[in-house]
Length: 387
Image 1 (cartoon, rainbow, N blue to C red):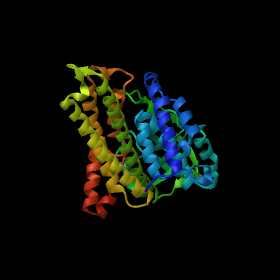
Image 2 (cartoon, rainbow, N blue to C red; image 1 turned 90 degrees about the vertical axis):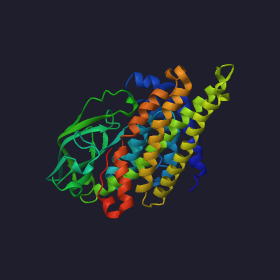
Image 3 (tube, rainbow, N blue to C red; image 1 turned 120 degrees about the vertical axis):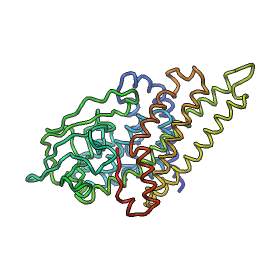
Image 4 (tube, rainbow, N blue to C red; image 1 turned 180 degrees about the vertical axis):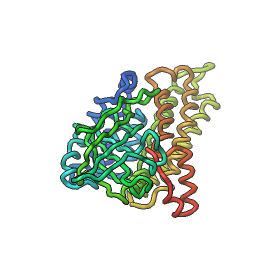
């Protein structure tokens, strides 16, 4: 599936955003341990928060393939910034597609305009990859549902106040009792926890929140009991694909930086690029990167065609994150001590690669998912997912 002219033009503009705004400022954002606002505002102005939102809701209605390419382009600058932006866009799309019209009208315009931030909340303090084990409890009350419990390790939770959240309505029923709700962080009963202090990638805004007696109205259940688990699992395929694309973007940028450095830096009287052993490191990274990008394209095209992409999405994320884990240290070593300077991407990309290996299915879980799909559909349906 080829990109449209409008999609290619948008990606060119996103490339400028990554190079001219995110890359020069991301080290400062990390030092300040915050989600950035400057880059987000510029992304909103380009229409990136409207990317996949249907045209009928004021969005651009572009393809998932374009979204995957966008993840690659922006991931080259910073994993955290890209995750944060995509999460808000994801919530706008979800509400536009699944929420009742009055709920979509309440939140989607603000999300697209950058007036509010969005996040999706599956993971809990005691339930990560095993999504069916969540304990956030939804209890029926007149006119709606009372929600009590906690979510943790949520991208954008430091700022987001429009939340697509999953809760258990029938304890002990595993995935069968899970429902999806839209939660308004400005309402009574929503308690935001302090943002997590991490070793890096604070631009994701990772954190959590508690709900204590929060009341969600009937119309704010946007994924009904019996369908929410399947819907959330379906969205995981897309997430795994764009995480793989972001991993490719990080390696691609590291390769670009090292290639330029190798032409300029001399060693033993000649440029580094003239040393065979040094060149071979880059050649191997380039070959692995090309293969992983082909897998991402395949998964993205299957998602756009509404085909079952769970196997190829899992394979793409497994191989792309492993490639990033392996090649980023190699490329950093090719820079020598110079690569330790803050304005180069190696340190933040190394941490970004570690985060990529955890979110939306750990490496170990992906291996099980691949095995299950290969063995048959009944085993594949019984799996779980983490965010």
